[in-house]
Image (tube, rainbow over all chains, first blue to last red; front, side, top):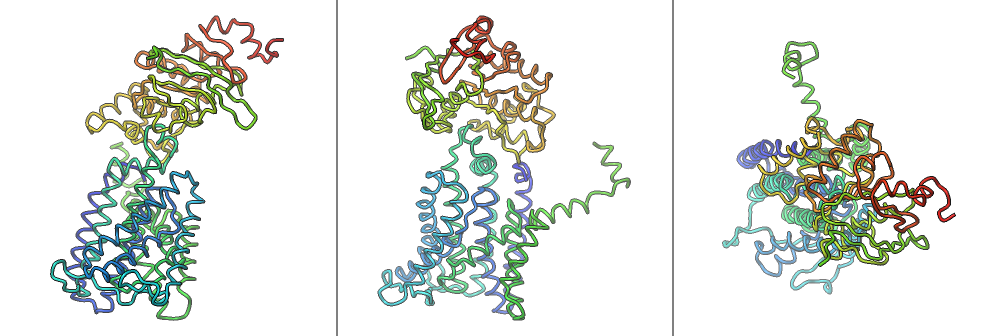
Length: 345
Length: 240
């Protein structure tokens, strides 16, 4: 996909996403049972998480194996800040700010140290696993930040729910669903907008050819660091939503969480935004259904899905569907429509 | 302040024990078109890479518009006003010609001015029909021209071209020579090349590299008539 394709598609896609979001907000809480509403809120938070890597990997060309580090940091930062401050609005800012700050520090060493892509993947994965081990070992009263006990492998079950600003009234599941919808749409629209800006195009230029971008005067390392930080902030937002849908636990840093988001992006389509979100929803629904059946471990199916997509649909869902749609809409060779098109050329 | 746009003083580049450059002194006036030539391994491409920021010289200074750029980052050197066309075309392969040129116009903020400039450069280099072609699917000669167009579009003070005619057909080489001569009307140009036919088509002044040093410098015909230079090119042992 090229720059101009992004520009042309941007407005239409965002408008469609806005309509879908409004429809979901209006209809879904009225018809869905509470359990489904909470589950879909959870999927929405994962959708935001998928967008964070779709932006970083698909457009920045940075394969981060440890995106879950920022996801988990966002959730923990929110929970700890909310317990200590007693205010969830400020804590929400922490949920985005702390992962972004952490990414700025980590990214500085990664990008300014001119580490190759392979090392970047290894280091980000290692950082995630270190955090996973560290958080898991924080059981007992000694491990607390202010009033917040980290809770080891139990996590922080008493994570305060988001409250209405200034009133302190906790959000209901329907309110949380609405918030998750808005967050997913806003993140999608932000990413769409971002890739059409001068900054976004420069990031794509670096992805395409870092040396050429630098020879044209683009500061590749700074651009990579910037997109890394933005992506971490988005992952932190996803962590905040997840923390409000379930609760904060070390599994957020786990290897399976780090792998899941990679699978969503690959299956959805690298270099797309809608695809990874769609893949995230589809695979989570499938995993939940398989889990209910209890016939096979959902992770095995997830692995198979990844293999099938890598081998047979390497471009992912979104480009494959777009190609299929184009084939359907193109008149068959020899038909009057085709001849009219040929004549027009 | 130096009267020269570019001045290299005692530039050396060592790779372990290998001296790729060994004390190069080089001066270039504004508006010049200079060809750097020499056999393989003479040091011309290493010198070129020192100018672009790809290599950090082991020793010496490279003054561009009076500022030492030796060892600076590639993007800083580009921002200082040096445009580079590499030996193997280095392009944004997944993007179209138009998008490549869009990215080359980093400093142009106005959308209308940018589109006008893109159209102008494409016309000047003769690649207008390739506007919406994706670079990854284009022929080598076309890619060379698009990369040259990107350098022209960025409007640098100094244009560095590394073997721009490599892999081109005779017709494309002639067109390229005409473009470079035209470019030299407004820009200072340095061309690294070893194709004598092409050098004769574009250059007045040449600098010959040999074994990491400058062997000779002067008008193209007198240099090519120089027995030492001929010996180097024909493989006769220099100084024998």
